[in-house]
Length: 208
Image: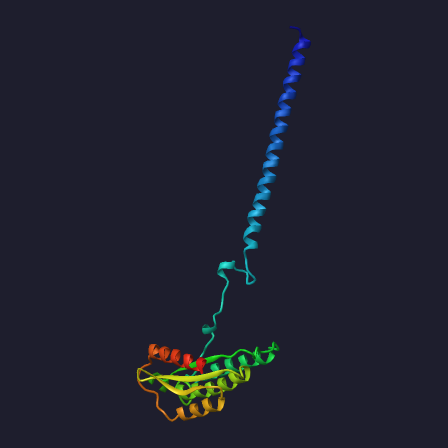
């Protein structure tokens, strides 16, 4: 083998080494690019999970309706309840959807009139406040359901007592509720007796 052949072999070997080095460099470069893109994606992924307040979605604060109820200076929640009732009335007034007045409903309204209704967290006490709101409810009910019927039952002394019979006249129920204010809440409530009486009144009202 002469010198020219040795030069050719060395040249070919050098080319192979350069090619190998170039391919390794390309591989390293592409690996760095992929790693860089991967790192960017890893950085962006947590950012996408963050909520409006800067924390993660599962860390977002939430508020429940009963978390915002606060007592006033006298320790009563009557002001809060009155505010909620007024806001509900305003929502009803804003609702322009016509009521469906052609349905005949027979409803029995059951009220708790046990000794716990003597508590004075509402002024003058729970029972008086409840009766005032029920009188408003009766008026609204017959405004929206003029051909329906209503009866009112109280739970008192472990019994169910009829305050007003099944009737389509709102004045009958309102007068009965006004008379109910003279009766003192007593004893324990009996939901079973109230449900059984309500079922009987509903049957008699629908058959009548």
